[in-house]
Image (tube, rainbow, N blue to C red):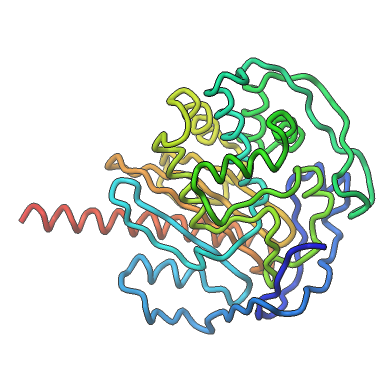
Length: 337
């Protein structure tokens, strides 16, 4: 039985996206309709208008406007890592992690490298999903594929969001329970992994994330920003392991229409995307011209189409980027007087 709670939001058209196009073809996820949501137990009332009451600054106002949840839940959290200045909208509400969970999976493997239990040149088989009916088993069947080094698997998992590569790493570390133990040791709350990627994709669409909170495989935007911040600042991994993960995120080729889309040309962004039924996300580190880093997590549901969700992510990313730069410039002008 899924752990989920319904939200009091208007039911929008369910536009079925999936993790990866190849899994759409294999499992037919693009044709799925979400199951009816459980009885409402966790209401959330979306604002009918931006309603800036309670927000104190222009950055908050910009995020509140763009994260208006009238067409589906939108969660945002961001932090300027040089000052600790943060902003959020539904930052403490769980959203589907989708492929953004791959950051925590890779971090778990790299931590084991730092402990001397694994090496980057250790080889593991890709975990290739096999056809099976939805919900027909606790875990979707997979079979071993080509053997690749852990370094190669990490590159595929982060830069191309490759699911068999991710499940290879997940199997190596000991499954979702091992990742959850790493998350707990890191002191992170509001984030959990319950299934491997093959199972998550096969059973995608059970609930509509625009109207329902499914606690499985979820993260709050604030928890994801804490994870990003700690990894970027070297809190949990060695310098070399941090370089492997952040470097792969900087080479990410998915989500060109998301976090980086509206940022100034040549802005350096280290990020990881996620896509499932009626939900899209992008999380990462944005570097500013004055040498600062901004950790940001944007989770968007509903909005009528994947293109609209991508546009929301891109718009929020630019608003956060501009907002922090404006505040920084204002502080510098004040200090120079």
